[in-house]
Length: 274
Image (cartoon, rainbow, N blue to C red):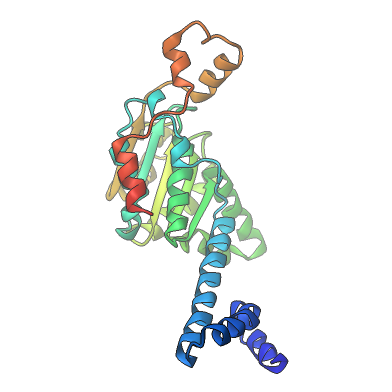
């Protein structure tokens, strides 16, 4: 038996090795055949690999596991189409190599929705990477100096879903334009992106300092994209006011603090993903 376990470890079949004694006792007790015994061991290994795969993908994604769709307060952003968000959470747009752009002023929940959809994608076995836009272009720029550019850019091309947060938070350095455009160009119709931005498209010429390259970037992003505009109030200001007790006497605002009742769309979405 020990020799068999050693061979299983060599083959990196961890779950079979771990459960071998347990499954052997089960097989003897229930008098199951060799094929059934083998099926049980293979099922253990498959389940173990799926669990480990999910854990690894979640760790590599850099996503915030607290920012789930169930915690997004749609009652505070009534202009957001819940049906559209739940449809995006199905991740069909990733299979189609399409993009999503969340556009709105700071604090309206763009990043929360990006994280939430990213987490749903990981659950479906997708490779996801979340990164701030300026952090990505700085990594690409730095990699040119140490000769790791090819490996670095591949990190941003490999994921099924690349989430670029806070595009437009500050003006992009001129030396980063080529690198950013290269990511957009190579992912166009090859991999999906979610982009969050506080700038309207007409402002991107100023953001990039070049209207021509801005036009080329916008064209590739929006060609197959869902644009979601969030025009509500800031969650951060709302939370600050609540913390200071400024909503205590307003029953309408007070009611918003409770967890919103699940909508029919949300219940249908959850039932379809059980």
